[in-house]
Each structure stands twice: as C-alpha cells, then as structure tokens.
Length: 193
Image (cartoon, rainbow, N blue to C red; front, side, top):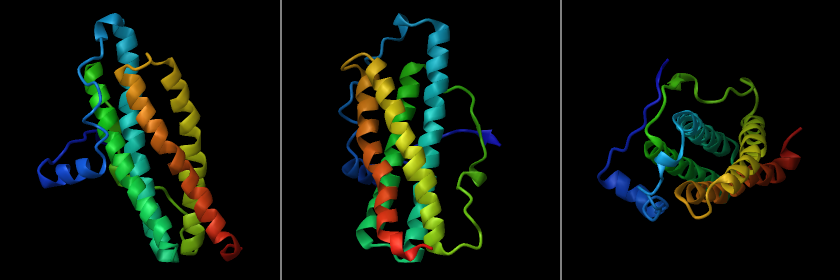
C-alpha cells in the first residue's frame, strides 16, 4: 500500500493530452470560495473528491484492460477505438478531480495498492467472455451507477460555479462510457454461449 499520488509529466505529452481533451483550461479555477464552508464540510468534500481521483484512475485501468480483451476477441475497430478513447477521458477526469481537490485545500491521505487496480476476470474464460464480464461490471454497472450520482451532486452544486461545471463535464462523458458495454454486448450477442 502507498499513498495515492498523481502528477503530470508536462512537455509534449501534456500538450498532446490537452489537444485531445481541452476540458481543463476553460474552467473557472481559483473561484471556489472555501471560506463559505466550515472545516468539517471542507474535510468531507476533500475526502469525497480524493476518493473521486482514485475512482477515475481505477476506471481508466478498467477500460484499459477492456481495450486489451476487445483486441483479443476481435471486437470491431470503432468499438475498440472508442474504448481506448474512454481511457483518455478517464485520465482527463483524474486531472479535473485532482484540481478540484487542490481548490478545496488538498487531498486527504488515501492508501492504494496500484498493483491490484485491474479487475479480475474469470481466468480460463475466452477473450469474448472476459470482455463481456468487464463490460457488465465496468460499463453497464459501474459507469451507469455513476451517472445519476454525479447528476445529483451537480444539482446540489452552485449553478455555474466551479464544482457545477466540473461535474457537468464528468456527467457528459460518463453517459457514453455507460453505453459502451451495451454496444459490445449487442455485437457479441450470438458469439456468447
């Protein structure tokens, strides 16, 4: 176990990510008014958003694993490319949520074991079965459940404020993430027993 820590390398890799996901630059950073909240409220928010960093990171790992099994089972090129693109979305979310945490006053201690971040699948199953299993757990369940939770959080955030805008960006991305699993299952239907 170690403390959760994320960073940017910068240089051409950051520029490439920004070119594909310019979602960070136009948000109203520096406008969150922490003095309007009590210390316990801020601590609770920092803990929730710190957990959010990890959940977005874990989603990136899950979709990355899903890309691999899509390739192994010969999934359609566009479906596989969309899944790979979702990994980039999730890493952009890691950055967004990390920046929110900094606006709130910094992360709380959060232990992680990154060596166990990928999801276990049925070991001896065919690639198409493992892909279906990951689609159900990652996309159809995990991402689908996050959409209404984020919408509720967005509804409770100050309209037009930083948190509302960040949650709005997250909600817009999560919908297609939740749909990917159903797209795969539709394609894989007759190929599954």
